[in-house]
Image 1: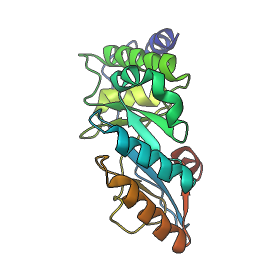
Image 2: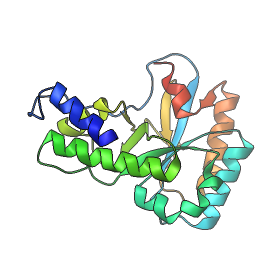
Image 3: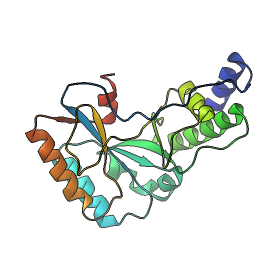
Image 4: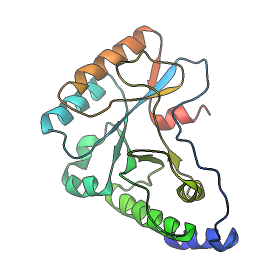
Length: 204
C-alpha cells in the first residue's frame, strides 16, 4: 500500500523528476531551555546476549524508554525475541541509503523497507537513522514524503546532559548498561527528565 502512496505522491509532485530538495539534517534534539533529553542506541547484531539483557534491565529499572535503531535483517534474526524489547521504541537503521538512480526508485526502495519493518514489528518506522553520514537530497525527499525523521545525536553517555539533546549510547557492550545508569542518575540529579524520542519530539 505504501508503494502506491509513494507513486501517487511522485506523480502529484512532478512524476519523479529530479527536483532540488535540500538535504535533511538529522534531528539531534531541540533548541530549548527545558531540562529534557532522550537516549538512542544502534544495534548492529554483534551485541552479546548478556549486554542486551543488562541494558534492558537498566532501562526498565530506571523507567527509561530509549529508541533502538535496528536493521530489518536484525529484526528477522530476532523475530522470536522482539517482545523482550518492549521497554524501547524501535527505529529503522540503514547501513547505507536505499539506492536508486531516480527519486522514484529511492522512494520505492524506502517503501519496501518500511513495509518490511511494519510486517515484522506491527509499527511504522517513524524514526530512521543512517549508520554514517547525512541523507542526500533524494533520500530526504523520500523521508519527508513518508513523514519520517532522520535521527542523529548530540553527545553520548560520557557527556553531561544538555537541554533537548538526543544522546547516543555508542556500541552496546558489557559496560553500556552501567554507563546508562550513571548517565540517567546524573540527569535526574540535575533535574532532567529522560523522555522517549517520540515524546521529546512533541516539544518541537
